[in-house]
Image 1 (cartoon, rainbow, N blue to C red):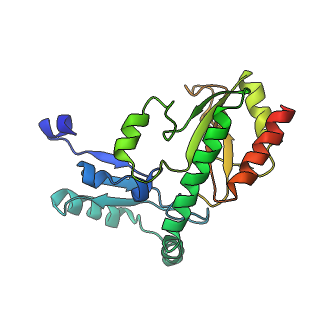
Image 2 (image 1 turned 45 degrees about the horizontal axis):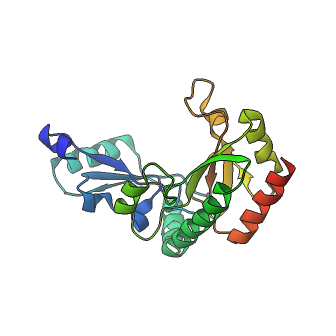
Length: 218
């Protein structure tokens, strides 16, 4: 941000994954914060939307509001109602997402068929120290794993899970898993053996038990 200020640039942070429950970019000096309200704000996989939050109300804010007005980029009244409904449970949901993700990450890190677990709450994560400075009270509900045995074993592990829905989205109350490279396409730099997991608010013990049975059969 110091570099951006030196050159007169605006800083924008996508805070969809962490949400303001764990990270507040405006307090860290960011000018504009972006959220996909489809994800954790919505929380129930039933709306599409986005939000921009500005640190200051100035000419840049007015310009973007004008673009929004001319482009018609506004949600429907019903989507607004659904979002307001979801925000009433936001703080309760986020605490469970994060606690479940931490429990699952710790379990998977000890599994011999898992090559690596990528979760900022684990000390083994290369940016754990940065995450600990920026995030307060938890590390969110998203994690990835690298499965030993390459693409074939990663896809097989997905197929053996019973509680995790195979889907690309994230932030809903249900746990999701996806083979990310299949979603992104053959030109993606994502490893062939990487699975992305959006940890839901089910009982953590059930999620771990599901992975146990799947890894046993892998």
